[in-house]
Length: 316
Image 1 (cartoon, helix red, strand yellow):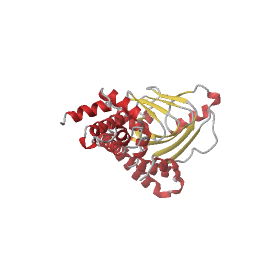
Image 2 (cartoon, helix red, strand yellow):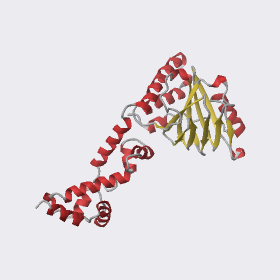
Image 3 (cartoon, rainbow, N blue to C red):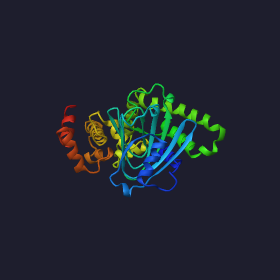
Image 4 (cartoon, helix red, strand yellow):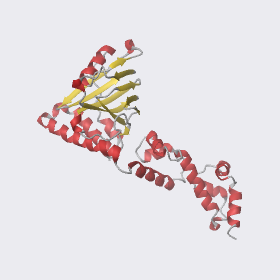
């Protein structure tokens, strides 16, 4: 299965000499869209823009320092209203605002914006991205809420499609007469990806359930935590935390609650009456009896010994 590392590995660097702020902004306007630009330290700024057109799609690689770019009604000309721009973050951070939403992109995430609407973009230092500018006819019925929304370049269709896009970008010159057909085929997959990423029924719930099942199967690992869970599912820690948003639990509090519940079950089991409390705690990933006792009492209002005694007394 294609991973994020595989995708980044085929991302062409923005080759060529770095240029100063004024030249860089002109190159962005010629390659992507017109913007108003702002930079706190224009004299210290250096950037690279490489534009590789293929048929009616532009593959634009960019590197730069910190800057801001804005499109308002006065900036949007009639000849620039018929495009979407999809950007994959490769390093640094990008803040993209449009349609009342703000997406904060970190490496391995992508977003899309509409050339016909006002937008605001702010980048960090060490900014590097690949942008795909394509005509709107490739996405004739855009999913609601698609703009300024951060998506993960996760295993499956997103990383596969981005791998193909970046490979096209790297090999534009060698595609010859097959280039236009190749780009149309890949753009069909982009349309499928954008619809599936946003609208696949129950996608978030399915992944959340898979994560919870995996956590249950690994509760005995004392080093279990958000980073390990995210890595096991090939998603970023940020994506993992977003999955749990609105559930009433953080990732860590869910792990803790599940451990306490399993300990409650074992402490109430008459077949385990002779098993020391410390052994039950260790079985479910608690690193020490003292820590377990504190967590258990905070969660249940009773010490493990008190809970066990009350539970077993009720069975007599």
